[in-house]
Length: 454
Image 1 (cartoon, rainbow, N blue to C red):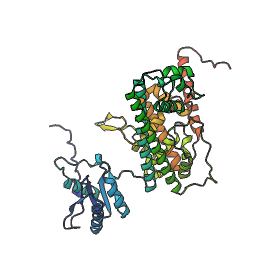
Image 2: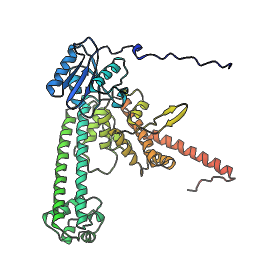
Image 3: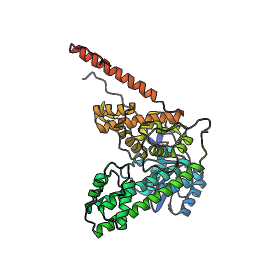
Image 4: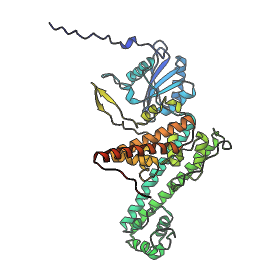
């Protein structure tokens, strides 16, 4: 008989033995045409009811939940269908928890709208659901305008490609001599072509004096086959480009009015706006002083961080809000952004350690800002190039975006201005470690490092 002792049996807790935390909890299953709601048993004759998605039915749902004594509601983040009912219940004073759909995976064999709402209500009663982050009403308005503006810029970019295609079909190599056809020289020439001017030398006279290419080179690139069907396509693409530009300007006006309506959190007289960094102006930047409004809201200038421009700062703030207490620590914040390794350990083995895919717009903006550090001579740029040399460009972008996220979290939480000296100190320590390593390697080879003469 073996002398080994059998492992002790562990008594697993049953689901019914869990403590009920939210006694006045309701669960919603939301669709396009109907919403199913479930309340605790005994609160109504029918604890599960279905409602249509018209506005009057949504108000009736809110009234029914109030009659049943409901305080907190959990719902699944399904597309955009949850937004109207979320806003109505939030105005009525309910505690609304928007739950990630991946956290609501149902047990096998139970899949219907009625059973889904019952499952959500049961999980929420036992406190097993965690609400997703949702900014306050003020930042939700900014986020809506910012997303609308980004959509318009993407739509305008498509018609820039359509203009380039029409030019190539006519063998007009304007893109070979001008880096941006939507600049002053490019748009003036395209408008003249649409107006009926096809003489290359006359078109080349619209050249801006600051253009690098000469007038003769531009005239040579404008010799082509001006066919009527391609001119028609170019005209329509230009009109659509102008239309989207007008819509972006209207969105900027609405966005500025929204910023003006917001009460400034910081007084510029006591805490003046620091001078901005010298950077090239982005043609997609708004016409008003966006940096000033963002500084009045946050008290810090995020554009002082290398790689962060005013549009990136607006996108990040619109997505994460101004209250950093939503995340207990900077690790929670970077994990929410999807910029941390996802540890999947089983049996003592690390199965997965890659970052989880994320569609967070703030994450995308930070990744683009990290990619802009490629040619930067700042400590952040040196850090990006070091990570790229070690791990490749993909992981370098993630690492640099992670560092930018940590800096932004620190600035917004403690309301402290950006201090580049701290990064310089870290850079100096890195250089000292590299020098020490080189000296050790030289000593192993029987050599000695000698500093270069001045």
